[in-house]
Length: 219
Image (cartoon, rainbow, N blue to C red; front, side, top):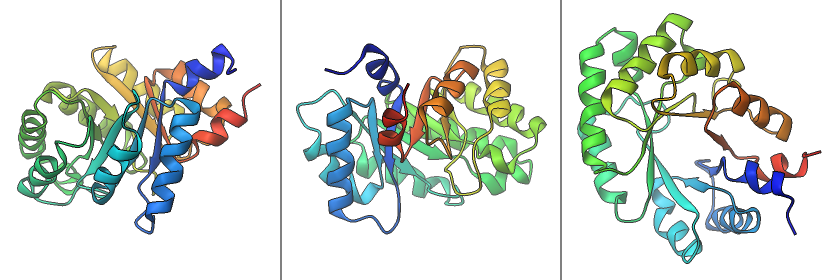
């Protein structure tokens, strides 16, 4: 029987495989692990949403997919179409903010795109990836405010390609959202100790491709 602490931490974890080289067997393994440890959810590429939905049927595990992955450079219409095509299969969306528009300080474009995305999601939670490893503290605060004002459900730190998420960035996001929306810490989180530290810093969800390692490093 799982310990109560295991069950508690598992409910924070989005067990993730968004590797472009992933195979159906990898997704089967991901979902099997999610069922074993009762993770909150699984996150897969749009190509695999149909398969993942079948694999977690009759469970309470949530299914998420990534939109505009991994850099957010797609035009808004492409992101909206991705949401429309995967909508029937998934429970949540992990959407990459338009990073070039943000870096160009075209904040009105970023905001309008996020508003359209939230509207197209029709109430399903949208987690907006702002890619904190690429941003200054000032930019993190600005991006977080845009996400908060857009009506999205979460600010998500990173896709995990540039480097590990930092505790100070989660704390900065937490001080900005003040509990109004969720915070998903993602990128380089591999152990229970790390996951717990991010939760204490303000994260309400943990995204990791190392969910099993997190569970096995408890105690």
